[in-house]
Length: 139
Image (cartoon, rainbow, N blue to C red):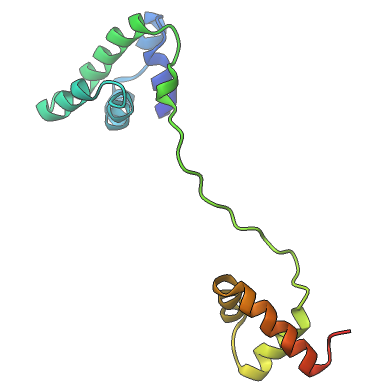
């Protein structure tokens, strides 16, 4: 059983659903469950970490105490994180011929040119335009 399946069942008031959660699953997910619930209840979660108790009864305690307090999974369970910035993929470079010429004449790899493009985009585009003029590719 996955972590968030167990978390959903912690807040479910049905005891028969909770009994389906295996002891092994409770033990395996103890750290993350305690950490997630520790967002709202830091003192209790910290005490469970300090006392080094058996994980399965601790998860049962979380279920017993929280299933009566909440009728559904509370919003603080699902916290927002910073999303990783996705890089825009350029399908085909307009300056492909110029880049091929530069790779051959300067004996550099496409990775070197990509790094130049990434770290110095304005200078790179100006340099490419200048090279285009010099080799006669610009129309």
